[in-house]
Image 1 (tube, one colour):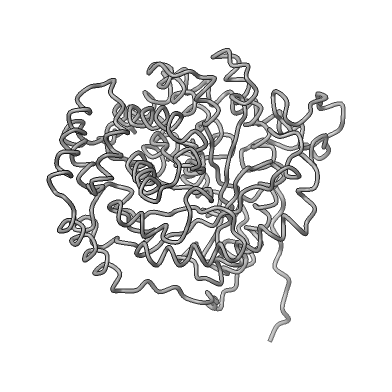
Image 2 (image 1 turned 180 degrees about the vertical axis):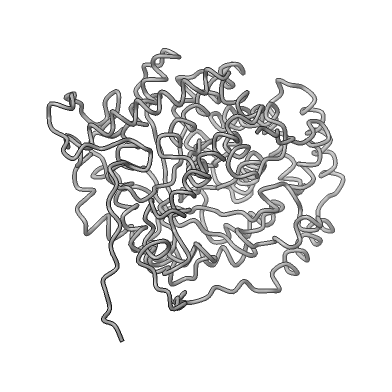
Length: 535
């Protein structure tokens, strides 16, 4: 029997994942570091002068499964463990506008999020939880205006002042056409709905963020960090243009625009990404729209630590990955962070894995020292150099999209979809070839077939039956005449291009009209998006 031999380790490449080649040593003469202070334009070092010493980031855990009652119980558990905000995951039927009785919905009820088909379910979701006392984030896009309207209606029924509501609804449809696919309507009416939501929310719920422009899903779909930020800011400009066309005041509405990203594993690239994106957004608003109000120039963002950077093989390694990504988010100055559980690569988190994810943030916050001073990596030759390089790359991406005719045209004609698919293919090829090292997957893996996945989450097989029973009960108990009247009013308003649809959606929710009924009314007016084919 021959002696065991050490397996050769892969070599470190000279490039960050975005393709920027890094010098072996970055020296002071390679960077021009301005004497910037956090809280001041262009906000490279952060949007608040005292960073996290004034207020810690909001600690969230993306959560939702099965019925509203089950998810409500999970929320209360997480709040008991020290979570400071809620992040609501919705199931695919809710995301795509199908009621639980639709044949398209039945196999997916409660699978990747909670089923919310009507106001009664939203009320159950927040049973014993004060919407006015906690920041709530909803990861929803195609039906985001409806879910937001439902949240407002639930607050009304609880007697909660709308002005006290804080949180975010993702409501970013442009990236859905490119990266996720939970679109419903064509691009133009979808843009109208988003503008309606933002303009209504600015007036009715002034502390609530009515959009979170999300680069996260571009990144998970395969693009680089530079492309992720470039695509996201290009989408942001498209939303600004739409709101201006609707008569919005950019100085007013820009204060409530927020952003959302994934954090991947190259710590310094991620820190530089956020620093460069924050600086570039402020410059773009000032250069293109003449914005000078510091609060309107602030780039406020939340992140997910996890996503496609997590893998199913050797899943406990994901705890380390999430910890590194959490650190990068803090060093980059995020305002809201949720950390994936180690088992999210293959299942809904268990209570144990969800608790570890929350504890990861608490350890970084209170034990690591990373939050003690603002922008602790500011002035690092490497970080400053990489921030400049990434800003240059981001501008090139934005200029490319603007040269094509802007984000809306690039999506309608399939250009961004094609570009994303090509980037995803390149990323996969690098992983398959072993050029990009993924520990436990393509390098340093065990070949004996063993893999400890830990505790297995099991969704109650009766959840669909319970959701369907509640749905039918609502249809039987509601005032159907009032529901039909509200839906007819929504239809009439949708016919008028300049009418804001949110008051009508809130009325529909108060009448216990369902998500599927509201979507059906708008589909009849607008049709559905037809995905372009581009080679």
